[in-house]
Image (tube, protein in one colour):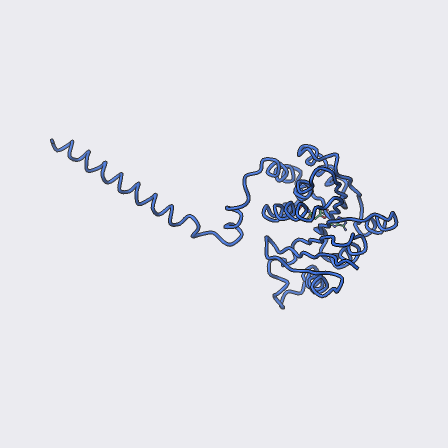
Length: 244
Ligand SMILES: C[S@@+](CC[C@H](N)C(=O)[O-])C[C@H]1O[C@@H](n2cnc3c(N)ncnc32)[C@H](O)[C@@H]1O
């Protein structure tokens, strides 16, 4: 072996060793820099083209990026399916992300009534639900959700599943309406109830924080409900309306 061949062989061995060390370290550090949310998401939230397009459409329209988290969306689908819900009420549509997740949980027949303040948001949500193949199973009611809820009560409508995800100061009012509109055994879910940890930071006293604290106390203590707060995403409160 001449000098240049020996150098070549030496370089090849070094490259193989470096490759081995890099591969070993990558395997070791797969999870090391993840937080709890990223860990859960990496395992359970599979790439989803339909939902990714919803997020892109929201950004394109300059709307706020405040859809439910991917794992929260999966949870909604599973809950609707497990509850065997047929009639669903959503408060806060935005671009339709949660609407798609809720409708995915239906076993065929069923309907989503979605309350949204802004016509242009409901229009985008409806377009996205149509693209997802569930556009026929939704009705949007535009305006203040409290007005729409009163209207639904006057019409004698009832629901099996509720998702509260709109203005935080009204969460307790929304809960009261949902209980009145609930079929026995109905499920009520509300998003963002940990409010990035502010609800248990007693120095945090903004209106939304105080309202969410009051909501958590109400849903935890209401004798008409069985309830729990699940630390998923930004916190999801969940309750089952007891049979009377
Ligand atoms: C957090 S976003 C909803 C996100 C949506 N649930 C999702 O995950 O795809 C809140 C939505 O509630 C709507 N909203 C806010 N205040 C409202 C009100 N008083 N009545 C009805 N909708 C309201 C907003 O316009 C916004 O679209």
